[in-house]
Length: 340
Image (cartoon, rainbow, N blue to C red; front, side):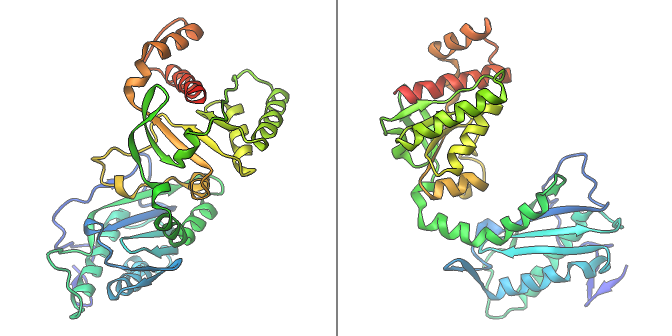
């Protein structure tokens, strides 16, 4: 057993007796060369690491120690094996984007555990800082996401850099980023997030495109929708088919307003991330500009007789458990919201 600064190294873990919950797909190799985004929350999501000031985070003494230890991660294995590509420390969590260059002797999770142990040791040495009854600055869980698609590294690096600004926007506009349940729209109840006034605007129109539409037909439909949106129309769509996705993207990029139906878009109230949820990417920006309302129907709406009848008219059957039924039901609900 070897030691670093008087502590046991990853060959002999101490202290952390609870098994961490690591969210990862089974096919990912967490020892081989890859790029991973590691997200670690503080215990109970307490803002131990710093304070948002304007659009940047001023680190607390604990946050400064955590930053120091993030840069030390390569020393656990060997500087050539792991590169800390980018990181951000938020008040209650950290994102670490790291690249594994050479095969690691142990699972990446072992080194994340060691990082957390080291952070705890350093934070407990701060006599002016009290962790009260929290043994760790970090909670027991952490999340991993492996980047594999083209352009994901640049996208994720931007996401990390942009985290403080996004938090500032969310705090400045809490009503736009608050999940609201049991929202009555038309003939049903929905879970919503975004600009609720869009559901009250009378100039609403449903947007559906058959999967059989040609590229030329989609282009013509897009020009028609852009012209209507310029005159104040708010389109309501499930954005499922290729044509719907193209047109919704064009409307959003042009700054027009949309109501988007989601099949399963929000965490449940019992989910630990429920109170911290925010839409990602372009949906976040559209919500911040009051241009978007995200809507998720309650499960019972998929089985209403009127919706079943509309789906049956197109399919001749009512297979509630198939994706086709769910998509067609979403389209039917979009039309209902548009006409409410």
